[in-house]
Image 1 (cartoon, rainbow, N blue to C red):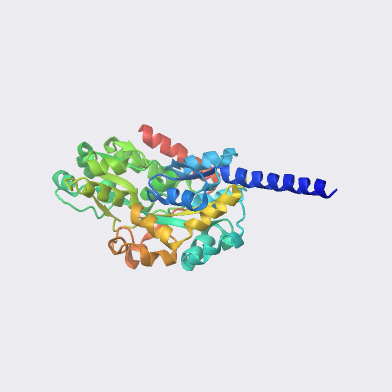
Image 2 (spheres, rainbow, N blue to C red):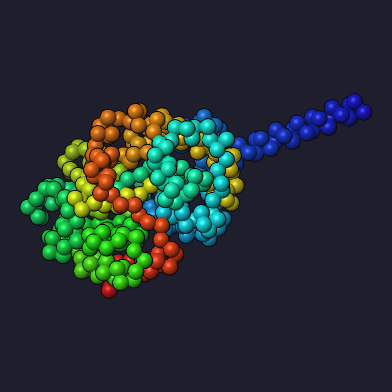
Length: 365
Ligand code: N2P
C-alpha cells in the first residue's frame, strides 16, 4: 500500500511537471502595429520567462478588427486603438483584466488612464494604454521647397487645396489607408464635427478628397516610412512616431535625405493604442506575464526610444532620451495638444458608410 502510494505520487508529480513544461512550450501569440516595438523587447521577454513569442504585425485597425470579429483570431495579445476597442468591448471580444496579475499597473499615467477609460472602457477594465500619437504631415523640406517655394508645411491647405497638392504630385504624396482616421482630416478642415454620423457631412469630406485624388500617389499605412527616409516620396500623411522613425533612418543612412514632421496649425487627429487580451486567447497566463512586462518603465522607455511614440507609462518618461521628450513632434507642447481631436468611436453603420466612401475615394470615381 505504501509502495503503491509512492508510485501514485510519482505519477502525479510527473503529470504536473509535464503540464508545466507544456504551458511553457505553448507559444504566446502577439499581434501589434508594425514598427511599434524595440528590436530586443521580445527577445528579452523570451529570455526572462522562457515563453516563446510569435509576433505578427498589422497596420490598420480595420485589419485587426476583421480578425477579432471573425473570432478565433489565434492571438493572446492585441493592440487596438481606443475608439475601436470601445466597439469591440461591446461586441464581447475582450477578457476582463485581473489586476492582481498586473502588479506593474501602478506605473501607468493615471490621467491618461482616466481619459481613455472615460472615452472607451469605463474603469479601464479591459486594456491599458501602450502608445499614443498624432496624425500629421511628414515631408522632405528640400523637395517641398523645390515644388512649393516653402520648406515648411504648417497647414492642411498644402494638401487639401487641389492647386497646392498638384505641385507635389511629381515628388510623391502618400496618405494613410484608413477611412476612420483620414475622413476626419477633411471633416475637421471643413469645420464639420470629426465624429459626425451625418451622410451629408461625410459626402462633403468625400468630395474634397475626390478633388485632390489625382495628386495622391498611394494610400498605405506603413510603407511611407521607408519611402520618406529614402527620398522616394516628398509628403506623407502619417503617424507621428512613424515619420520620426523615417527622420532617424534618413539620418542614419548618411543624412542626405531630410525628413520633418508637423502638426498643422488647424490641429490634427490623435490616437491611443491599447493592450488587451481577446476572450478566446489560449495562453492567458503568458499574456498576463507579457502585459506585466510591458508595464515595466524600463521596457516602455526602450520602446519609446526606438519607435518615437510617447507611451502611457508615467514612470517611463524619466527614462526616455531627452532628445525624444523634447521633440515637439513626438511630445507636443500643451498648446498643440489642445488642438488635437480624438478619433471617435462610431456606430458600425457609420463606419461602414466611411469604408464605402473611402473605397470610392481610393478608386478615384
Ligand atoms: C505604428 C503606428 C501606430 C499608430 N507604426 C496607429 N495607431
